[in-house]
Amino acid sequence: MLDLACGQGRHTRYLDALGYQVLAVDIDVSGVQDLARRERVELLEADLEKDDWRFGDRRFDGIVVTNYLFRPHLRSLPESLAPGGVLIFETFAKGHESIGRPTNPDFLLDPGELLNAFAPKLTIVAYEDGFAGEPRPAVRQRICAVKKGD
Image 1 (cartoon, rainbow, N blue to C red):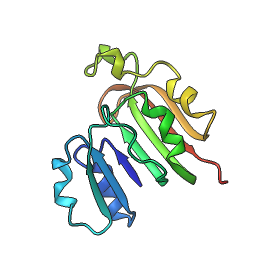
Image 2 (cartoon, helix red, strand yellow):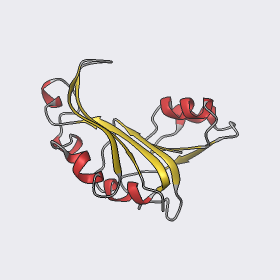
Image 3 (spheres, helix red, strand yellow):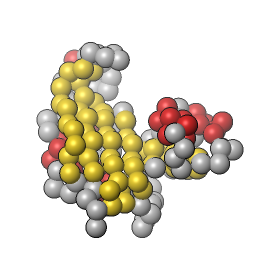
Image 4 (cartoon, one colour):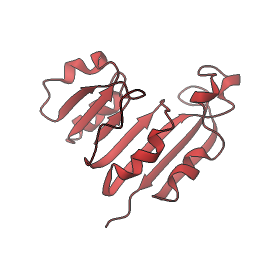
């Protein structure tokens, strides 16, 4: 499993507790440093917006991305999934700027952007685009998609 832009490791911790091998990647991995000794967790400190896509031929059974958007990665994510692998991607969308941060349009998805990015390459299992009141008010897009088996 790949937890891209893992932050404080909420998803890494959950996946590790479920018994998955997890690669937690962020520009600063200090928020997950306590997991460094865990057998199933690998930490990688990387500037995801300056370094090339660093996973090469490595394939993941699952990729989780939340509250993070760097559009060039949208092309690489499907190829980084193993056959049958699951992508879960959730982040802020246009309209959120009226509620709070982020307000920069570079970090806000256009309407239908995740669907347009992944529908040609993955099977969409679930998709949401709009206002969500919980856990705190936000305008978000969420997608869960599966890579067809080869």
